[in-house]
Length: 84
Image 1: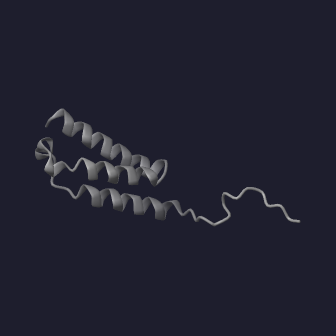
Image 2: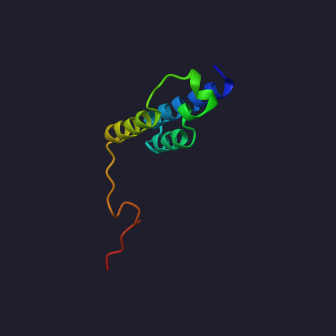
Image 3: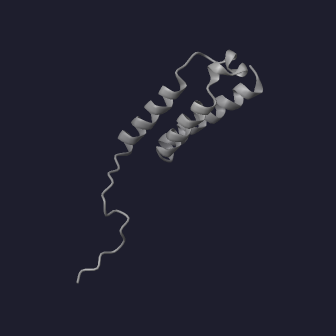
């Protein structure tokens, strides 16, 4: 396995881990990472397993969103209200 393939796997699964511990944005970043560095189309991807890398990142993002349970309201970032 080439050093580039090892680096790809470490970054990808590191981002997936951060998706569950820090926030779903890291899942989006993992998805973008696999979109621009698609392993099957690279010379270093021959030694990696034939996974659907983007689907795995998207599923992890969706699962993190469900587990996180945050709801956003339109006034969440509006600051203190001024009643007149």
